[in-house]
Structure formats: structure tokens, C-alpha cells
Image (cartoon, rainbow over all chains, first blue to last red; front, side):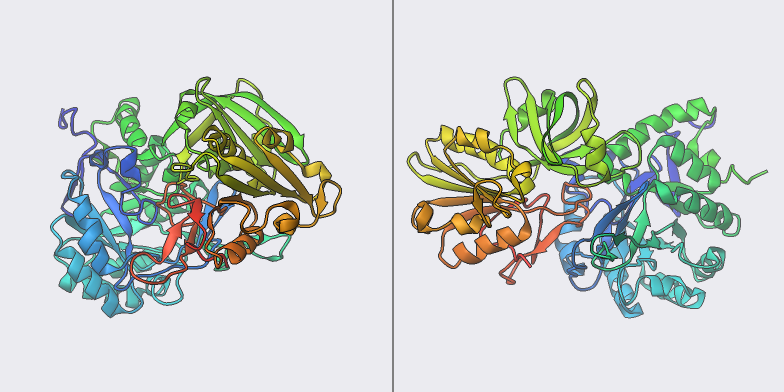
Length: 310
Length: 265
């Protein structure tokens, strides 16, 4: 037996050791304070915190969320307290969780913004990695505009790699014709890993007002409804790149985690499901160990790419 | 706050599109603060996916029973209206900051103003105020007579003025139409205001009583995601754009705010 019973869930992605492969997804968990009221965050494999920009952002007008069958649309608009506040208050607060690698989601309007945030947060002792947000669909400048052009995505990745002291994951948008091209471009530019997928662009219209439900018009679709899209994209990309993938998009159960691993993920992030069940991450982690027995697997990392490996 | 599975005791229609549901379980015993809310999973599957925020209308902490009154508005509340006694209901709560009652003195006069589905939380509040010896006057507004509810229950706590837009029950007009000296509800006739209802109603109350320096608390409604302050779906701006946070989260900083704290635009 190669893996002892205690670390069957452990994974290492781009040098970051995680005691289990489950982290809450950026934007769905704030900076952890709210969910720390429910359970010890040390139970998580890692935490991906809310997108951070140079300056404080107020976000979009409300309504910011709308429900769809098996999913939800959001257009929060990267609301966050800004780089200095995150460094002064949020990241130090997370230091109490000594067994919790922190991944900071970095966003901006121009390349210089991303560079400034990435450089500063990567120097913070408890920050284990950076997730480059080149896929937010809800801001007018930056965000998704960086994630739909392979050259620009690569340029940004290279600039961040120059300044970052920690591994850099690039969060990819599904709103592209060929996600593999973008993935290969950022890998060539030095990305240490990929996060996929961000939300799909969507819209709902209110029948009474005849106007979009969201004040922003369109929003990002998340939840179980997008899981097959995520699985397909990870399945395609993981066969074409060598860097690890944090899989996300509608995960609700340990079975879903196994499916993402089989598609090619090396770790996973749980997003929308936190809103439905605040205990979902520890529940999935507990269930995963039993699933490994059910599927007769020694350690979870053996499953990465099992869906396409011969 | 916690997540719990409660058991449906009853679930019946009490007015046009209005249902009263009673549930029982350990979690209900912890719902002691009026004005807080619960986040309810309507149905077990992924559609509807998100929870629905519903106000706490009454709690019997001894029997561990929670009463919710909700209006069937969309898919989630329609599913909720189909629950039958004995069925389990997944509830997250109690959530948010409720109506402050500490420090209220016997002999004070509280004005409770509710509109439509904003009326229910005022009942649990009124009960607690009455226990403190506070005199209560309720002003409750509805669209039409068939939508009126909780009139009898609120009448057990004090005076009740019913207002309907079409005049089929009580006074014709809006709740603000009876907040005059003519009804003994002029500016100087009461000590504190508590209100929950549609945004235009809350705005009218804030515009009228904030400049006068009256003490009052309003409870807001908004589409929510997580219900615990993490997702930032339900924010509203503060009036004073000075130092500190420029917004409030309705789910966790609210849903109750003092008059003048948030901008109701």
C-alpha cells in the first residue's frame, strides 16, 4: 500500500501541499470569516479568497443575483475592500488557521494593477498561491477581456510570474471558442497551474418589467447547471497541458469531485454549493474518504485524468 | 446560527397567496430575537437551488416551534406551499441583526408599521415589546381585503389600523395616510418606530421621520445568495459616505437598520 490511510486525500499542486483536495472557490466564501462561524477552516484543503484589486471596489447595483434551473447568475462586480485592507486585515486574520494554504484571487483593470496586487500579496507569509482572475464576466474593463485573447493572457501571466514569489494559477473563462489555446498560451508563459472554469455568461429577463433581472444585465452562471461544461473543458485541457488544474463548476458532492478528478483535475473548488449548505466543504471531505473505498482507489491523486488515461 | 432539519407541523393558506407554516425542531428554540430571518431550502433537489429568506413571525421557544408567514411569489415559495405536516424542512438560522428591544421602557409607545408580506416579523416584535410593558399601535397596509392577515393577532397586542389601497378593508390609502394627528399617530404621539415592508413605504417613513430625529428601525428585503454575509449579493449603500465601509450587507448587518443608516434608492 503506497498511501497510508491518513493521507489518501492529500494532494500537491504546483508545490502547494493540501491535506485534502477541496477548497472553497473565490467569490463564494468571502475571506472565510462568515463560514468560520460554522466550522474550523483548518479542515479545508486550502481557501481561495475573494478577488482583490488595487483600490476598494463597490461592485454593481442590485439585484446582483438571480436563480436559474440548477444554477444562479451573479453580477457582484468584484466588490472588495482593496489591496491594503486585505493585507492589513483579511490575510492576518487567516493566520490563525495554521494548516490552511491561502490562495489570493487577483483582479484588475490593466496589467499594472494585476502586477501590483500580485507582487504585494505574494510577499504575505500565509499566502501559498495566486489565482489570476482573467475571467470575471461582470466588470467593464479587465477581467474577461484578459481571458479571451491568448496573447494578452500570456502577456499578463508572464508579467505576474516575474513578480510573484508563490505559484500562479490562471483562472480560465469558459466564454471562449477554444479554451485549449488559451490554456497552452498561459502554460507557455509560465503559469504554474490552471483554475477552471469561471462562470458562463448568462441572462434572465423579468416577464413583468420586460427588463433583465440583474441590474448589470448579464451575469455569470454557476452551480450544477454548468458542471458538464466544466468537465468537458477540463477533460480537453488536461490532455494538452502538463500543469495541474483546480477543477470547479457546480460541485455539490464527493461524486462530483471524483468526476472532476477523472476529467483531469488535481484539486477542486466548491463555489455556489456553499450558499445552499454552509457545511458542504467538510461534508464532501468526509464523504471523499468513503468514496475512495467505494471505487477501490488508494489515493485520490491516482484518479487525475482517469477519464482519458489509457 | 446553525443549519437544522425541522419538521412541518402545519402549512395552510390564510389569505390571498399568503401561507402560514409552523415547524418544530431544536433550532427553533434558539430563535429568540425578533426581526431575524431564516434561510429555507425549498425542496430537496437542485431546482430551486438557492435558499429563500423568510422572516420569523413567531416562536414558541418552549415547544421549539417557529411560525413563518410567506407569500407565494415564485418557484421556491410555490414548492414551499406544497409541504405537508411531518415533512422535514432544511432551515439555516436564525440569521441577521433583528429589531432592538433592549432598553425599551414600560409606558413607552411603539409604532409598528407593516406593509404586505412585511407584516409578519412585527408580531414577534410586538409580543416582546408588550412583555416589557410597551404600548403598541400597529398600522398594517395591504392591497385589498382578501390579502389582509395578522389583524386579529396584532389586535391582542394593542391598537391596529388596517389600510388597503382599494379601501375594501379599513382605511383607503397607504399606511402613511393614517400616521397623522387625526388618528393619534402624529409625530409626537409615539416614541419609537419599527417597520417592515416594501421599499417605497420604508423610504416614505425614513424621509418623514429621519429629519425629525425620531428613533426608528426599518427591515429591508433583497434577493440573497448565501444569507450569511459572504457572497455580497444583498448590499445597500450607507447614507454617510465617510470613513469605514460604504455599504451594508442586508443579510448579516441587517435586515434591520436604524432610520438614516442606509440609502433607500
